[in-house]
Amino acid sequence: MNIALLVSYDGTHFSGWQIQKNGRTVQGEIESAVKESFGCESRATGSGRTDAGVHAAGQVCNFALPDGIKIAPERIADALNVKLPPDVRVLESAAAPEGFDACRSAKRKTYRYSVYFSRRENPLLERYAVRYGESPDFARMGECARLLEGEHDFAAFSSAGSSVKTTVRTVYSVETAPWADEYAEGVLGVRIEVCGGGFLYNMVRIMAGAILECGAGKLPLSAVEEALCTGDRELLGKTMPAKGLTLLSVDYGFPLFNGEYSGGAARTAPANKE
Image (cartoon, rainbow, N blue to C red; front, side, top):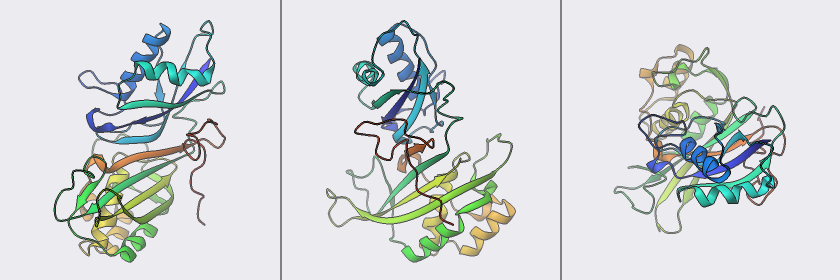
């Protein structure tokens, strides 16, 4: 039986999604929970490999469960959560179609990068957002975001070490929205949400840095345009820290989960804006 899981995790103490020899990983924890719960070894395939420190609200993975194990698919989440550590939880479980692969079947993914504006660090925000010392111009941030929408060669928005065949990607939407945390009175921030068909290594974090630097007047829009044309990474700002990034949802073109956590996550991504 092919089982799909909707997974949420705090990436602070993980070395990323993918199993590593000398690091604690989300995939490793899930596969260990499967073995403890059902007595079988099965590889958990994720929709993508989040890096060390990156969080997830709607990561999706799938694994094979032997037919001899009798359990309702929707109860598998509860069985695994008993064995999982508190910083990772299965929100939903369901029987997936034969041939479904959480990675290869994905159509779109949506990420959020969270930033707050403050002269000093705020301990109530630091775990899931990155401090930026000055409040940028939101209109200029929006102009930069529009430049990054569509099909482009995003070579300049990728860190070294990637071995992909092509650096051309389609970004369906880039949205910037102000936010304020109820526990950090007077502190404002911005959330940058990016929906695309696929992403290069550190692509969203570099995009977030470029948008912020444009908004702060430190990076001209012309530099972003030139970076898209030339692939020159040196034209752009720094790669933003991992802790501000969260994988929000994965879209497969059909409803994979139907429970209380499935509204949007792993079901429907923002529509493409023509």
